[in-house]
Image (cartoon, rainbow, N blue to C red; front, side):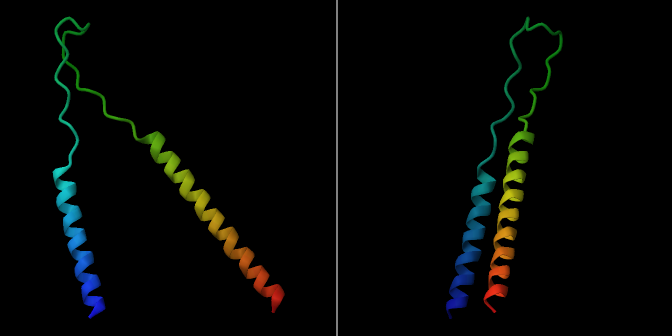
Length: 83
């Protein structure tokens, strides 16, 4: 019975998160700048760069994975010495 309740809670949380994610969206593009901005044509606004944050997340994930691998091998070598 506990497994059914846990599964139902997980599914309901997932559905709730999907509805929240659908309603929360980015702002619409900015309006074009007023006339006389140095260009005869309006240009699309540039997108936000995600490269810096993505690189940091990848580096942190690789560092954490390396740390966990180091801990795992250290524990294995300690267990081998005790045996």
